[in-house]
Length: 127
Image (tube, rainbow, N blue to C red; front, side, top):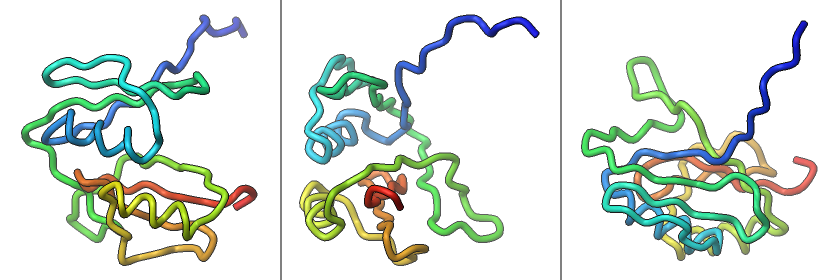
């Protein structure tokens, strides 16, 4: 079998009703800097390098339901963010504009919703 061509994941993009507003939330949450800022597209870059996080304005964005039931808008992806302290990181996330999800599937993982309704998880190392 031939080797695949060189590929490098440069980022993940999230749709939102307002790309700049959601990018600003994640900038506050993660402490990342803005690398690209266009009217309907914003890209954040980690100070450690690696894949970036982008936001695209989608006027018809429908937030997923967490957890989704039959007929609900399904979550197609989520972000996993490793933290040292769930309580401290959770308080920071709420102060940045996140909402703690009602359903929490595991004691060592906390699910939050960003301002556009995308779920993201805070978790401890080894969880």
